[in-house]
Image 1 (cartoon, rainbow, N blue to C red):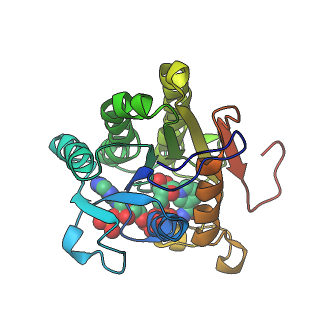
Image 2 (cartoon, rainbow, N blue to C red):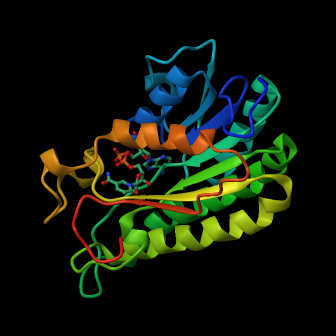
Length: 242
Ligand SMILES: NC(=O)c1ccc[n+]([C@@H]2O[C@H](COP(=O)([O-])OP(=O)(O)OC[C@H]3O[C@@H](n4cnc5c(N)ncnc54)[C@H](OP(=O)(O)O)[C@@H]3O)[C@@H](O)[C@H]2O)c1
């Protein structure tokens, strides 16, 4: 790995896992980190369909967050290919409509599996490797819906994203002594398919471009151990406190 200064960490030689990199925010993060010079391990549901990234510097593995058996082989393949792990971006996520008057509980279970249990499982597996690196990073893509409840938002989506905030702070304590730093990245509406058909969503022109999230992740990964960002909230709307 390249020498890192006290001011910033170099991308060179650092290996970053990203879940849900097939499209939307995950793909934008992957492209930005590839441009920066990171080595990437991408977890996607259909590996054969992901094109356009440099195969010399990228591992593409199968990862479905609803399948517990997918997590360990992805982590193992990453270590086998690159010999180390420096960062984990828990990005895969889903938004399904459900509130306290309508919607089937199975929707809540599905969101819990993808948005919370997936990241929990990957963090557990990745932590020993991130600790070994001495400057491991975990970025959980949460949401402004993890910071407050806004009327009309899927109750279960908000519940899972609040759970991601707790998971983030727990991971921060777990890895701190070994240089692991953990961030909950909390954007408002980002211009992807996830929100395209959500009633009352911010109009497309006012949404955050996914590339801006890529830039933000790049910035977070560059910060030294002495600059821990536990939460980064990026709103599209005018609201109190966030
Ligand atoms: N868009 C927003 O406004 C917004 C705002 C705040 C936070 N976020 C969060 O940002 C993250 C990415 O969202 P996005 O906007 O990029 O959404 P998106 O365009 O719908 O992409 C979702 C990604 O998650 C993957 N995914 C879905 N179910 C999965 C599963 N069971 N296992 C593994 N991967 C799965 C998808 O893979 P497939 O291609 O295989 O379906 C896709 O790569 C999510 O955690 C979301 O909650 C989004």
